[in-house]
Image (tube, rainbow, N blue to C red; front, side, top):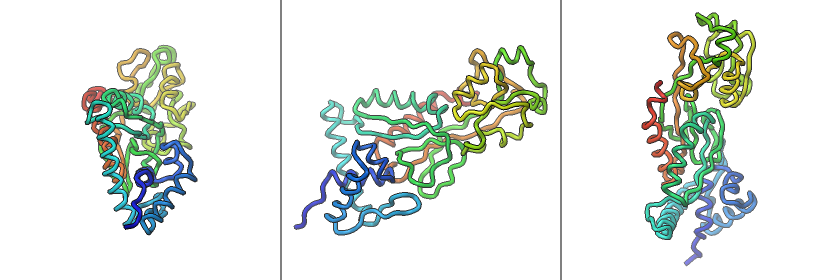
Amino acid sequence: MGRLPSPDDLLILLTVARLGRFNAVAETLGTTHTTISRRIVALDKQLGGRTLERSPHGWELTELGASAVAAAEAIEETLGSLSGLIGQDKNALSGLVRISTSDGFGAEFVAPALVRLQRRNPLLNVEMLSATRKVSQNRSGVDLEIVVGRTDVSNAQPIFLANYFLRLYAGAGYAAERGLPETLDGVGQHGFVSYVESALQVAELGHRASQLPMPKSSFQATSIFAQVEAVRRGAGIGLLPNFMVAGRPGFVPVLPDDFQRQLSIWAVARPESLRSGRVQAVIAALKDEVQERQDVLAA
């Protein structure tokens, strides 16, 4: 009988299948790119064939690799059950889950959902990366992407989370000093706060896609938190997520009956990630958070 493959190497292969990049796997496992590559080569030798092949989408599984990953998933599930027993809770989740999300929705919805999930599962580790971008066509180095707008990707599954609104707001001081426009054409006579168009991947979030008139001046920032603060401090009128400012002191709605944009939020994951209990639990927690706070999103 030939030598059985190393369980550690199988679990490394499983992580590569989920994240797609050796560097991301090395960061997750606290090791180096060279070590990951060496362990995969060793696993290929033990199995008598290649488990991975390069593609435009990062590392993809071969047929042999898919069979090896199935075995690795069984090992992971068994180890997860053992960790739960050690922690006196056989249903507890453990290990690391990495999530990419836009910063506004991430702070307001993703972080609360993950904190609540982690409090129920103290062996679960979370890494949340802020990025306002389209869904990655290549494997992105995360288990789950939370993205705004269209999800045109062929090798991953989009999961609808919620709709929300972008609306126009001004700071209370700005409104008192400069006044507010009475028509949409009048918005062009004011300063405008928005994303940096040249750095924006999600066009629906920018001023250009809004079809509003060109502003008198602009304040552009890649961070939605910087935009919210700029509006509050009087930089101009801003196109802001309603869930971040509606009803909060210091902000005045601008032409609320004349302009709004509705956008969607999606969770996107590759098939290998969706088979992870950790990822499934995160998606469930996000759905619960959104459901409980529909009034904030629909306002």
